[in-house]
Image (cartoon, rainbow, N blue to C red; front, side, top):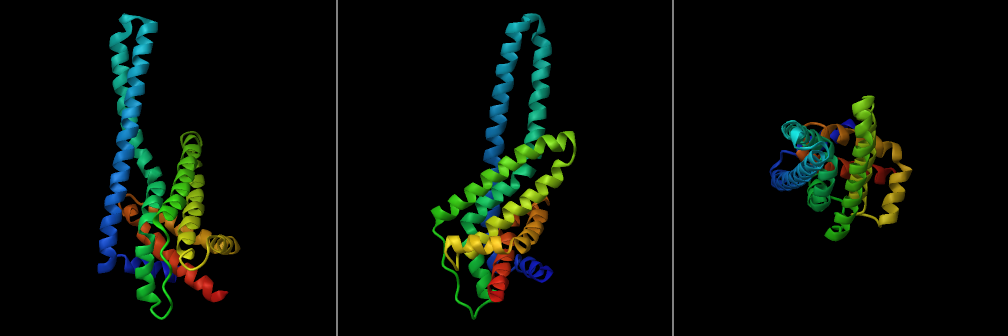
Length: 235
């Protein structure tokens, strides 16, 4: 596993990968900004609506105190969105990976497996659908883990393990479906759950590093192309 991790990391700064890296980083940043702006506006609207309701209940005498409270809530919401962006990165990078998976996988295959037939590109709508499902699951895991992070502190471990499982599954299946039907790819992943999960832990660790995690689609896809090739040879 360490050998394929090293191969994946070493290829990330090669000229062909730099082009994909720039495109994937740009798309990831756009998605993060759009999500952040949308959430901030929603929370700001809720804070304003709540302030108006509270003033109607408590009377105009509480106006100044409510304004101060509203500012505090808005600042806290902004900080929460910044922190939340870290947890949402697995979901964002999954969507980005579904767009560029074939381009990344093809370059890995050309470089490391030139004597083997390249995979068949996945239809973009299908890849986006698969990526969207995993992204929504990742958001659900974040929402479930967040209370545990705040209360017990164990949510970080749960989030990491769940991220490893979700990202490992998604990236492996995207790589495998280039060479075999969808059901066969899923069956292969289930038969090699342990290997895929360990590889997913490396992706989860990578996606937890701020700034660097914008390159997760390249690392995750490249890693799982190598894993799929090795497992295919073992068959």
